[in-house]
Amino acid sequence: MSEKSKIASLKPARFVKMVAQRISAVKAAPDTDVPPLESYQANRIAAALHPKAQFLKVKEIVAHSPDFKTIVLEADREKGTDALAWFSAGQYLSVALAFDGMCLTRPYSLASAPLDAKNGEYRLGIKRVKDGLASNYLLDRLAVGDTLTASAPLGQFTYEPLRDAETVIGIAGGSGITPFRSFARAIADGTEKDMRLVLLYGSRTLADAVYADEIAALAEKCDRIKLVNVLSEEEKEGCESGFISADIIKKYAPENEAYSVFMCGPQAMYSFMDKELPKLGLRRKFIRRELFGEYFGPAKEADYPKDVQESYKLTVLQSGSETVVDCRSDASILRAMEAAGISAPADCRSGECGWCRSQLLSGDVYVPASVDGRRLADLDYGYIHPCCTFLLSDAVIEVPPVHA
Image (cartoon, rainbow, N blue to C red; front, top):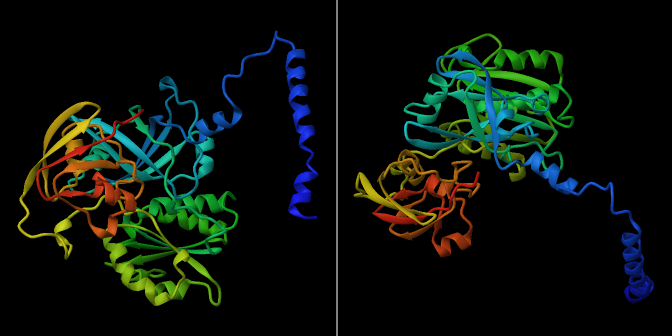
């Protein structure tokens, strides 16, 4: 049958009659005892999965060491969050903090399994960062009963069977273990049915390997999980020594079978793996990396200009107000705004999500190529991501407001 014949067979006149039938049915319907439609079911589901904000309360704090704690969170019903949003293993929350006159946001990977959210619990693994404002606050000052505001679950560091191989070689370093705890628990409880995880966990010593005992216990019960500790500063029986390398990956990767590599760790680990991964000859789609967080130290880049001043004046326009702040040239524009108490939008803080997108009205800036996630149109029209942009002169920017 030709395309014209198919269209002719639809008989448009029948559709015209349907309009009159529907009008008649509406008029015949009772106008009493019918509750008004407050919202469509699809909208209710969307609001539950992607809330604009989640109000959370600290349920428990588990101290693994003075520099690493697990923060257990539950819904703060008094502020309007009745249930926690569902998430996929590997995602993160952007947590908003306000203290000492500052307004900060920080992304933290969820260490809990998706089923834990259904049972009313999120877990965040927090590691101290040297001179880190947010991590020091959370580790030293946060207490049970305190409240926090967070985003809906975010991020693309998730397992997708249509894209990823069945076996995933996980490479974790430091606090980068947190999303892999989520993956391991999701595999063990059957949420991630298609994924097999071989986790290479890099630590200085075995004592530094947070969650290692728990993941090892899961591996004993589930043959789809395997843990290999890789220690850089000590030798232990059953552990690999040195740094995670292409040779170690080959040792534990499946033979004659495709596999994916998932990485989460500090910037130094990514820089090292950028030299090792090409040795494996993997297709690009089989290499996934979580955002390594905020970028520091632009002066180390070869194309960073010389003779840059220590600080500049930054004029921030937002919702009709104008604020002038001091901004160090080695700190991002976003950090300068937060330190001055300006509430600016931000989620990933790694140049990728674009939530902090603002317009540069005047001045010169530097954006490291490795974290420049702007669209081509943004380059043409002068937009920047303040989370990874550094001043080279006095500047004026227009920042969108934060909508709760």
